[in-house]
Amino acid sequence: MRRSRILAITVLLLASCRREPAVPAEFKPPADGRLSEEQVHMYLEGKKGMESAESRWVGERVREARMAGLSGGIDRKIMDSRRQILRSLEERRRALADSAKQAEVDRQIAEVRRLLQGAPPEVSPAMRHNAELVARMEEKKP
Image (cartoon, rainbow, N blue to C red; front, side, top):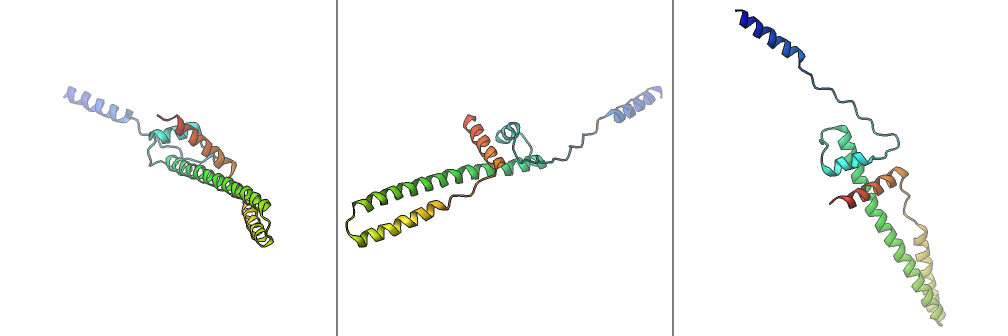
C-alpha cells in the first residue's frame, strides 16, 4: 500500500511539474514594413512553420520583393529600349531631306519622348530594401 501511495504522489508531482507550451506572442509586423536578414534567411531555408502569422507576413513580403525586383528590371529595360529608339530616330531625322518624311519621324520622336515621360511608379523605401535584401540573400544561397 505504501508503494502505491508513493507511486500516486510521484505521478501527481510529475503531472503538476510538466510544462505547458508557451503561448506564442502575437506577431506585429514592423511599422516600416522592412524584412530582417534573419526573417529572409529563415524563409529561404524553409525553417519557419507556415502556420504562424509572422511566417505568412514574411512570405508575402518576400513574394512582393521578388515581383518588385522583376518588374523593376523590366521597367529599366523598357526605358533603355525607348532611349535607344529615340537616338535612332533622331539620327534618322538628321539624315532625311524630304520634309514629309521628316514630319513623320518628328511625330515618332514626339511619341517616344512622351513614353519616356511616363516613368514607372516609384516603389516605397521598404519595398526597395526588401527587394535588395531578398535578391542579395538568394544570390548567396547555394
